[in-house]
Image 1 (cartoon, one colour):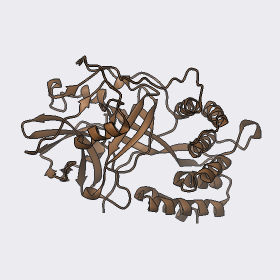
Image 2 (cartoon, helix red, strand yellow):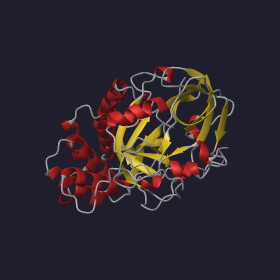
Image 3 (cartoon, one colour):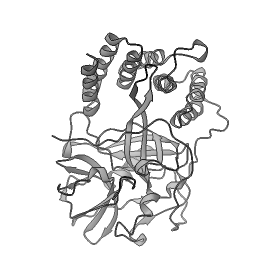
Image 4 (cartoon, helix red, strand yellow):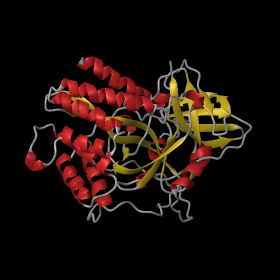
Length: 393
C-alpha cells in the first residue's frame, strides 16, 4: 500500500531572522513572471520520486555529464533498504543511483540528494537567495500531488500559489519558510519558487495545526499553513551533500515584485494577509481584527476569511464572547455557506462541535468532510475523518 508523505506543524510560531545567504551573485535584473510562466519553468525541472514507501517530489539542481542531481526532503527517501525511482516530466523512469541523506539526526534539516543517470537533456533549476523570501512575498509550490485517486507514476503536476506568512528563526527539521498555499500529499520534496521562477525552498510540511479547544482537547485543525526548508539551508550543507557551489545555477538578484505591505493596509487583500501572518505566529485576536476589517470591504474570498476566523477562534480556546466577534462554529458555518464544498471547514467545525459535546453534529460534519475529501482524492484526510468518526462513536 502506498503511503503519501505529509508533515504536521503548529499554528504558533515566532518571527525572526533566517540563515546566511550564498555569496554568488548574477547581475542580470530579475523579471516577475506570471503563474503560467512559473509553471512552464517548473515543469521540466520537477520530478516524481516513487517507491514502495510512498510518493514524493523533487527538483533537478545539477548536471554532470549524464548524471543528474535531484534535491528533495529526507522523509521521502529516508529508508536505506528501499529502491527509489525518479520519473521525469516527459514520463521517463530512472532508478536512483545514489541517495545522500542530509538529515543524520532528528534536529537536522529534512533534506536529501538523489542522483540518477540519463542520456536525455533536462534543464537545471536556478536557485535564489531564500533570505529574500520575506513575509508578504509571492511563492509558488510545485509538485506531484496524490489526488483524485492517482498515485505513483499516475500523478499529475500542480502549481499552487501562496504568500510567505512568517520566517521563524528555528523550527523542527529546518522548516523556517512558512506560507499559506494549497498543498497535498505527494508534493513533499517539491520546489518552492519565487516570483521569477527561482527555487527558494523545498516543500515538506503542511495541512494540520494544533490548538486546544474549550474542552481541553488538543485538536488537529486544518489550517492551510505550510512550510519549506529554505534553499540557503541546503547551500550550507553542500559539503555534506558531496557538492560544490560551482555545480549550481544561482541568481541572487532581488525579486522584481516586492512583498505585500503590512504596515498600513488599505484594502481587503492587505488586511487578509496581515491577518494570516498574525494567525501564523499565534496572535489570534489581532488576526481576527484584521479579518473583520477585510470583510468590511466585502471581498470575494469570504469562505477563506470565515475559515481563518474559525481557526483563530479555535486557537484562542475560550467560551463564546459576543463582544469579540463570532464563535468558531459560527465562522466555519459562514465559510461553508459561502463555499458548500469547503471540506476543511466541515472538519474543523466538527472539532468545534466536539468541544461543546454535540456529538451528532460533529459526526455529521466529519461524514461530510470525509465525503468531500474522497471526492477530491485527499486520501489521508479522508481516512483521518473516518477515524475521527469511529473515535466519536
